[in-house]
Image (spheres, rainbow, N blue to C red):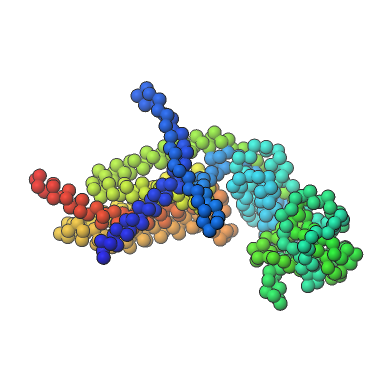
Length: 477
């Protein structure tokens, strides 16, 4: 039963390594280098997966995402003027501004943008990273404007399949339609200045998520007149000339309060409420700093980091082999498996790799053999007592676990503090430091698996070979 268990674990590890290698290695990569005065031109070509699953075409392509400092692009630091915003509304205001800028960036077509908020005392800032951006002026004009929300009335034709809005208030969900539809709408003089609040709520009768709208006194009068005179027409909501909701008026709403219902999920309703609050809480944005990062600088840094990583990997492997012999050879193989799994996780989960992230990854390479060193030293102690290698190996893994667990738990907690997943204001909020923490956390978690599970299984599988080597040495002596 034990042998069967070892074989099953080995097969699982082997398949896992094959899958990781397929994900990590490029499907089509040209290789060109010179050696001993001769030019070598070759390449790697791996067949791409392409199949159908339940009628759906599956063709997974995993790309390693690169951050601004590697790919090159633009970083802009914006400061929000909160002087006209009540203190209790400032968190909502900065969140709304971030959401609107993110939408603008998405419309601009930037791949893997990073938009973060930063607060120091009463100073509210937005840090916008735009990898691969070439037209700097267009990007600045795109993200530097104050969000504009406007209600616009249908003036040409009614939509087909329209839902209703009244005081029981029904509306369609956010619609993906072309901005050219603005030609069919006209302004009614109702903007975000008159929208006092927007929030996600739940319908008391159906339990479905809805979006509640509240207007100030001036907005209430405009809204009442518009809904009284234009029943059956669409009163669209535009943000920066882009439609985010297309409610249809069913009856007059005189008290300045409306609830939009439709095919909302709680997330969609909350996102729409945030978008609408951005119009209700317009925040002037000032560009504090802009920085252009060249792709050549990033590529040079990556090249040097890769060289440093390979040198470090080889030195660690050489040390383990020279010091621990056969066990060190197993540890070196485990280190290679660790590197494969780490890069596979980066690609599968879309981890954006930055230079600090690479630093965290290189640090985790050295930490990946810590578990093996603790285990091997424990095995040595058990061998000195007089146990056989198989007994010493099992006892070494068992007794070293407490030390391994405590050491890695401390590193995991440190990484979580650096990542700050709950956005505590008294902890780090820097994206670069978070990138370091993410890669460090991934590295520690994978090293726990490879250092304990994989290395133990490989030592168990290779035990007969080890015994033969020991016997051959004894015969020579």
